[in-house]
Amino acid sequence: MCRMILAHGQFDAEKVLDAARAMSCGETANHDGPIKAHPNGWGCLWIENGQIQTLQGTGTFAESLPDIDIDRLRGRFLAVHVRHATLSKNHGVAFSHPLERHSAGTQWYMMHNGFLPTIYRHLGLAESRFDSAEYLQYLVEQVTPADFTRDYLRNKMAQVTPGGSAGNAIFVTREKAWAWQWYPHDTPYPQYFTMHCRQQDGCTFISSEPVSTLGSADSWRRMSNHELHEIPLWE
Picture 1: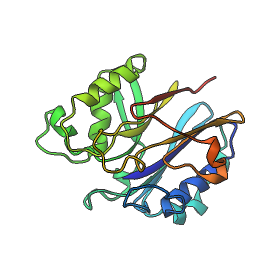
Picture 2: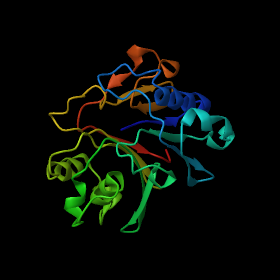
Picture 3: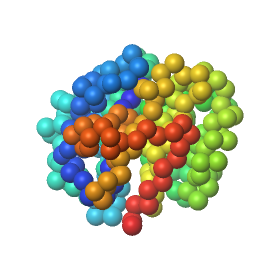
Picture 4: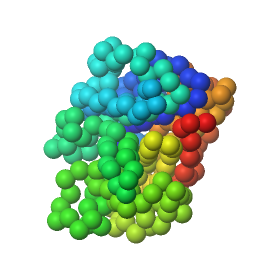
């Protein structure tokens, strides 16, 4: 289970990183989930000189934050992921997001919040190694960004064997980013798995939790389940 945030437009990168830190420490955890802190790795994705850049680490984001060169992240798009490992075996930088996969001529990046332990069955695997990586493969294998629509995602998730908690994700390609909210109708923690969107002052924020330092509570809206928010990166 994880927390994540993206920012697009005119924003203060330092405030976005601090929002991710606050979520990772449980400072903004006003939800129904049992997990408040997310100390098991972190990752950032941004655009620098027209290219997607990533940075990942282990341990807590709060401990690593002073070593991040914030000036490199002062562009028009930034996404941050802080992680709580569901399985003890999945620790280390190899399991930190964003995850990457090249498919059908497109380089895909993904940050995921949730646990999908049955996805591997749909890939013909004997067992699961890392559900988030399998989730990425399941959704983007042999698909183009033009086909990556709400209907496509809803149809793919409708075929997944029950047993997972959520598939909330941020997807990024060279031209576009998407924020996708999905959790099964019987999830016991709908608040925990509901992302929040704020569009104001020339900026869009999408976050696992509304963060007051980025905007008052009434400036955030709860995303609907199965909502897909698309962000062209070069407008």
